[in-house]
Amino acid sequence: MKIFKQILLLALTMCSIMFVSCNSRLFNRNGLDIIPAEQDGEWGYIDMDGHYVVNPQFLAAYQFADNGLAAVCAPNGKWGFVDKKGKYVVAAKYKCVTRFSNDLALVTASGEHISCIDETGRVIFVLPQAEEACAFSDGLALFRDNKGKCGYVNQMGKVVINPEYDAAMSFSEGLAAVKKGKKWGFVDTHGDMVIHPQFDEAGFFQEGMAVIRSGDRWGYIDKTGCYAINPQFRMCANFSEGLAVFTQGSTFGYIDKKGKIKIIIAAWDNERNNGSVNFVSANSGVMVNPLYREVDGNGFYNGLALVDFGGRCGYINKKGDIAINPQFDYATHFYGNRAFVRLDGKWGIIDKRGHYVANPQFDDIGRDLDGWSVTSDYYDSHAFIKAFFDMVGGNDANVFDGFSNTATLSDLTKSHYHNIQIDNATTMRELLKRDLTDEIRLQSVRFHFADAVMLNTNTRDFYWGYTNNKGRNL
Image (cartoon, rainbow, N blue to C red; front, side, top):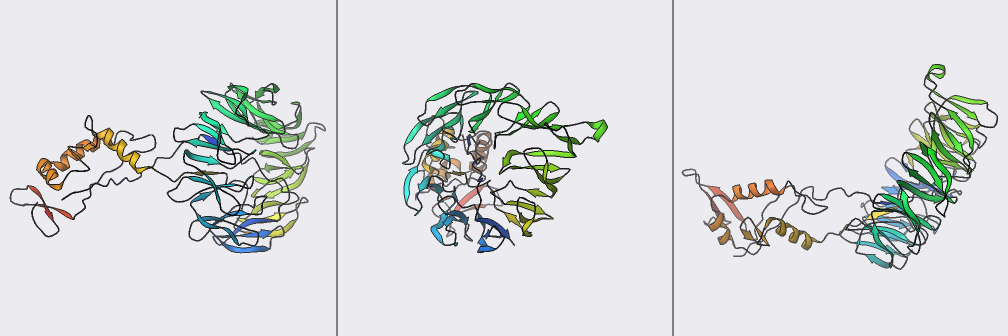
């Protein structure tokens, strides 16, 4: 009678390290017509006056892409894509998806590799080599392979930049930051290293400049790799509408593309302001508010920037003047002439004067934070079984503790009649100290037989023995 062994792995998969950075920088600066909104645990879509155009019915929902499709999570827990009437265009059958970008989306079905689909749901290509992948940007999709290396594929699924980088970012303005060893550089869409790896950290290009770190100071480079603003800041962010957030010493605020300070926040004056910060305009030198605390690192959108005044959110203009008084618990940047604000746990919509066009009533509002990457759900069980037996079998592959996956029950009972549990426990204690593969660590191992086998004991001599499901001694 043949037996088989099934290895049960509890808490099998270890969390993978994120080697890729998908640029959710692609925040929508334009006006939206509808946006996801949550009420009583279900998501639908509202227009910019707060009226539902798609009733709440989804477990989750993303913003609409330029092609008019949005990713939604159906009540069955699967993801698909709907049009602006809430009608499914691509059926909800995926475990995870990205938003559409360049009219393509990356999707993963349960137990499958990452695939790329078009607007009809037709599979364009499959990425069997990818463990993780990002939405398309500048016509290329960043992916990480099963060796932890990063590369890029084009819209036909062809690898155009080989996976050879230790970390990478999606393309932006024709260039992408890549890490080789301990340093970051930039490649173009052909894979040519146009800016040699030399930076300790690097961001993406926006408005022709990228943030970089050299040593403990941050600065900016242009697309030739030359310093546009020398590293001098303790922190700085990407430029947005010509201005960027910076921190230098105890002061932070906004600089222009020449590095000139346009808006200054004189911070940490404990004696005069009880630990608060002062917000002044560089041009007028006039104090605006002594309770200013934080700025939104995303910067200015449609002429206004989100700021935090003493725990309340408001907006300033490019002169450093308060445009919308601080009054909200939380807020977003402006999408065209609309922004989304939270007050007392509910979300509403305001215009650029700070007036409500929809009073706070929604439990949540969908923002630009999700839908930029997917992970593979495929695992080669044969590779795992081979790795398992190679590790525990020593010189005799495909053997664990003296027997293999072709052993009979008779073989097992003859060689391990008295001490199988002791031998296995000893072996497992040593095995559990090690990772089986880069992604897997065993937590427990159990053995299962094709025919029912019951373990019993003779209370007279305390020997262990085996019987089949009919009670016959084996």
